[in-house]
Image 1: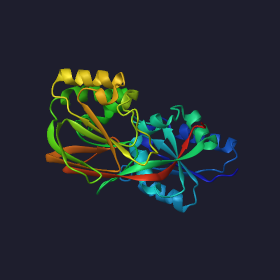
Image 2: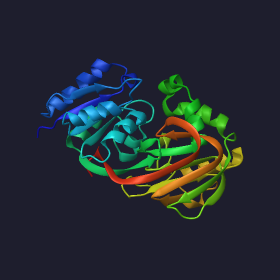
Image 3: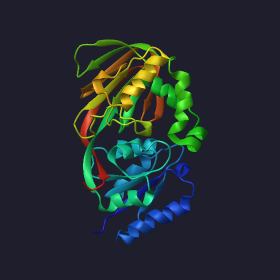
Length: 296
């Protein structure tokens, strides 16, 4: 079957761009696919314009070679279309790929694009900020992401967040109001609030083990530890998959989520920092994105 493909690649996430190009194009050629449309992101455009160009050129599959930020940019443009996204993990994050069982090996990931299944998944949308495929966060997690140097992430991967996270464990704790699906407000003193489309964090930690990317809802994690000992107990509960019984963690599920803080708080979408604000409002867009996944 002849399939028109495009490659949207973040050059900063690839050690040898020409070698990666030969690898990707060679694999597609071996499968009988024509030469793909080759589009490189820039510091000014993380992938939005490239995704639009690919769709306008008639691409049926867009291979995204980059981290979660690149995936988020492409997904924001292709959500609501029939163009499939194939994840070719690169960079630090790759959380969507991990949660969908996409291999981290480039050749194996390309094989999924060629022979895998097409699965419609949900995306989340944050008011005034765009879509996310993994999760949006307010509080500790956004501060940790924002304060971790890019050089450390490039060198150490997800482990680079550990040192920054330890510095911020007890610094970010705010009074917040949370409303699910337009219901009554809940009041909490929280370190962070995560609104997630999938459940695994960096290092494979199953924060929300029951979260599914195609269930038409978003999963909400409210982290409320007060002291270092509380964080240790919370981490142990997550690792041991204690679910709702995990100390310092409340979980909910909803189609829309509003979070209001007493002051401006750090915020992030799929590991990319966005402007601090007192409000985070998210809703689910069910089945909006087609993704290539391994055969079941």
